[in-house]
Image (cartoon, rainbow, N blue to C red; front, side, top):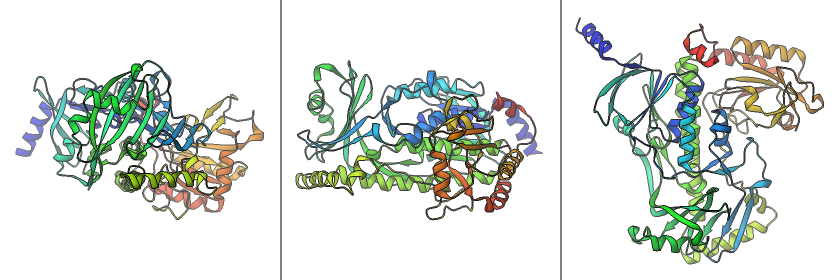
Length: 552
């Protein structure tokens, strides 16, 4: 009886019900909200700050992260305004070029420039505009989650308005903690970020410029100055310069010190210093990314050194990985056990990135006159050798880390297997004769593709399987079929897709919503792929409100 009375009281005061609560409206939380909004998931974003901050913290994204913005529909009028990196140079203290990478000559397997820069306040503004597309996504500024209680069917959070102190009870199925390095949600769960913090600090200087020139990016290889300099937008540049141990951190932030640091790289009369902030770099990861119905993502779950520019990229991958899985479970298209693969997949990936970033930092940012000069000499030698030169010129140091285990055919990626890798995104010809990027053609869900030249029987079997599970199905046609694409076929005008099928000796590939390969098999193994998919996925039941919103 007491339990019944308490339940009635709770219902009486409960003021809001949503599918998902997201705590934190930084880039990662806002991206998760956009991706969930696309999939018709009712979402409440809770942000403590009353207004957007004006500081640029993250400044770069790779081509995978740009592909996520594409997936979220944040292009065109909703675009972030990415500034493609054209050339990366390695400079010594005398501004001599030790080596360089011409990004305009690099392959773009994901359909975007290999590296791009941005101004973070503008990025966050674009993400908020994207959230406003969806009536079922709300942003509560000036609010914080004071506490939450989990149960079998969901959780209840106490959300307080920081101005009025009024508390609202919000009922949800899941809660995402995307509230940064000092995450309150992580503290409520009793979890800590484990790892190490660098002994040195860096000074991040943001300057406004009246001209789009000079437009360059460079590693400062010392020995006197170590760090990174780049243009982030047509009207902004960023200097991240290492501060030697023992230096007064307040003194280096003073205007005269800041201007002296940036003077070798730009005409001081053309810039306005907007901010100068000291920060430490960390190599830390939380012990558990999920506790019941609560998930951590972005800086709340992991911190990594900036030397490969992967901190924000990792958080955006978290958002995409978790968003499509939550949407599948909430739609009834997959069992809740699918959510267990979030940490499995993302932890392995992040740990690999942290190791690579640490290694890059040791190589590029190591101090001392002798060590720096020896390293710079080695860079020059390696850059000119026929076997090692391409490694630098083609920027192969950038991490490409496939998923090792998780929601994959067989559960584990075989050595040199294709499962867990990102599928390429070339431009393809569609039925009206125009060219489009592959992801835009395939849509947001699971999709099955058959290789160029696949038999009619295999294409029919593939389409039947896809229709039974609510997946998309497409035939890839070779370039000679240009002008003859049908509504369920694309023409591989550049040959990249045909080369991929040929290289991996497969006839059918199933792509996950995040465009990682679930499974790729020859025609003789199609039955095994079919059994695996039917064991994990099921078509959604009913045509409720969620389906209507998603269709819209």
